Image (tube, rainbow, N blue to C red; front, side, top):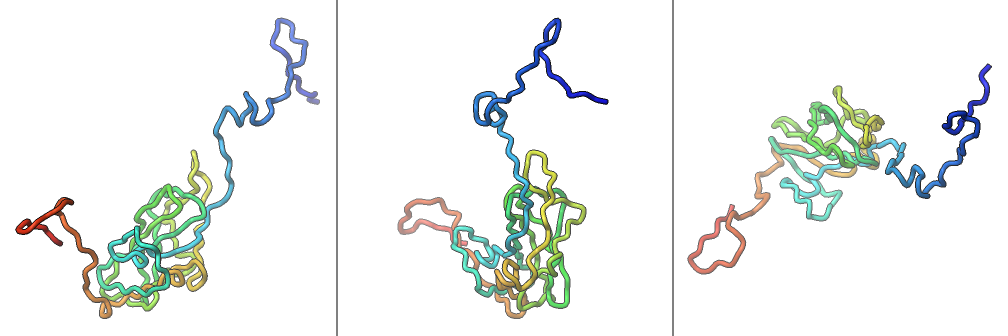
Length: 212
């Protein structure tokens, strides 16, 4: 059989046993003092699905305070950003997509970005024939990996995130967090932003200021 292994001092004639006591954690020479390795085994999950486009407006002003619960109407060719908030930062490879339920139609929202953060964004472009009183994704399994991966951010990403979404109509779901109506007839063209290309400064009578 195999006996108990021994660790001996390196000498010409090894005989004295080595001292196997490790440095106290946190003390000089200990692993915690010589390295910055962190271990976190929490699996990222989707906490909330909402739309910055509806909350902040078509031109997506992030400096505005969120106003959840308001109804926003979108028409043909309007772009709607759908955001998935995760419980931890995630890293995305490839191109996942989100299946949207638009009345009688199922449409895909394409991956837009956010990899490396605690949220990822998808872009849904409204078609002229899309119509729904409350935009929602197509069930708790509407997030399709499409051969991609969504994993927890780490030095060597390997832990897959849970891709199950809150059920439509329940807390954290798009249809409950953000009220979005998709209707070409109800949507009306409007001014979404006023800006100027004229440099900042003071101007007097007869001096031009470009407004767009």
